[in-house]
Amino acid sequence: MAELTDIKNELIRAEIDEYVGRPDERERLIAMFASAGPQMQAISAALIDGDHATVDGLTREALAAGTTALEVMDDGLIAGMALVGIKFRDGVIFVPEVLACARAMKAGMAHIEPILSASGAKPLGKVVMGTVKGDLHDIGKNLCIMMLRGSGFDVIDLGVDTSPDTFIEAVEEHAPDLLGMSALLTTTMPNIGRTIEAFLEAGLRDPDKIMVGGAPVTQAFADDMGADGYGKDAMACVALAKSLIAEGTGARV
Ligand code: B1M
Image (cartoon, rainbow, N blue to C red; front, side):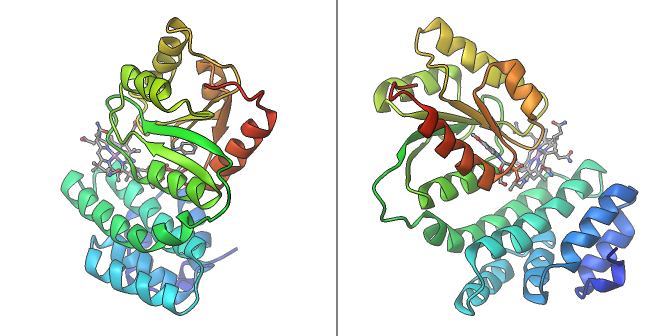
């Protein structure tokens, strides 16, 4: 089992020691950071510190030195955000600090986006995607979109706080093969179900075409809401999109 001392970055070590009290979370974070290289730990530390300029510079350097975009995303950016989430939940930091961390995350994502989104391949399918109504979280959705684009999907991004009507209008306009919904709050998760109901009422629902995700969403919740698939992360989102397309009948959402 990894130990706190296996983490080379001083700031991350100190933050875990001071702010992560739950044994399961402590163990998970220590294992995650201990297995990341020093450069990835430095990116996480800058993100935790809300230092967007340093995240920007370190991400550029890591990519130029040959680190893959996926490694920077998982071991640098997403890992850092995991610690931010715990501090936010426990009242150690508040919205302004989290916004600074989100800005730092976006500074890193700006460099990995063109790499993950580059595909050249013939589109595998068209996806309309948005964060549900009332929810302003877009980092995870944007990562999924980058990965989908990089895997050859054409994605129409509806942004955040997307009402059922906006989803419906987008489906009518773009006739996508798949619809994706992201939700990060327990209070907005039910809007996944409300949106699916609105599709049913509008007579637009194809039973094989709606995928959902976001930190609080589970397979069981997705099933309850009547979605066709759930992805736990951006890789799973791409795998799900491919399998829904492969299973599909060619009908639109
Ligand atoms: Co918010 N926030 N936040 N926040 N925020 C959470 C979600 C929270 C868990 C923090 C906490 O308490 N630990 C908590 C929710 C608690 C709950 O619902 N029970 C919370 C809260 C309470 C709030 C506010 C209510 C705080 C307040 O105002 N008092 C407020 C709500 C605003 C609103 O939406 N109406 C709020 C605001 C904000 C900021 C604006 C400050 C900022 C968002 C900035 C932005 O997105 N542009 C923010 C942030 C950054 C977070 C945390 C810290 C990080 C979220 C994130 O970006 N994660 C978050 C804590 C956490 O999740 N650990 C938290 C990184 C991202 C890569 O992961 O989004 O899970 P994630 O995406 C993953 C997977 O989930 C999956 O793939 C992604 C990539 O691997 N996935 C899909 C996502 N969508 C998918 C779709 C798919 C498939 C997979 O198919 C379609």
